[in-house]
Length: 147
Image 1: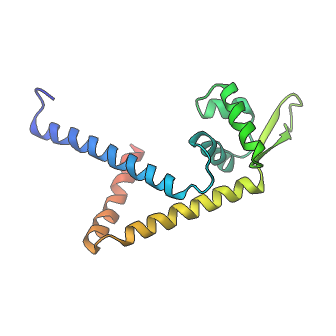
Image 2: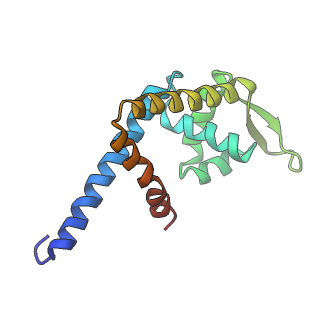
Image 3: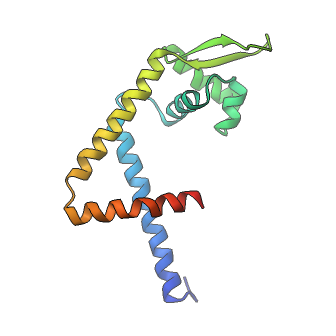
């Protein structure tokens, strides 16, 4: 930080602190809200299938920045757990689509509820002024995420 002005040094420290705090909060929410024992890759695939619908292995691999072989392993595990199933591609008989099963949808639903319940409980422990500060920061954090 040699040569930085005080405000630049303060901004750098704030970025470091915010990155660490947001990362820690996300890890905590995930750990408290994951009753399923699934890894992050599996959870990400379930989320993508839930939001975007059925996809091929190759499309999922591209979307998740993974090699198709690695995605095949992730999908095999999810299929074995009954969370995804194969279905024929509507226009290309050579391809297979993977889609969420009702059990996969239920895992996503329960995980979302668990996240919200944990965060509600954690926020309920804050003092009124602290809660007000957190609530006031939400629009700013949204704006940062959109820039």
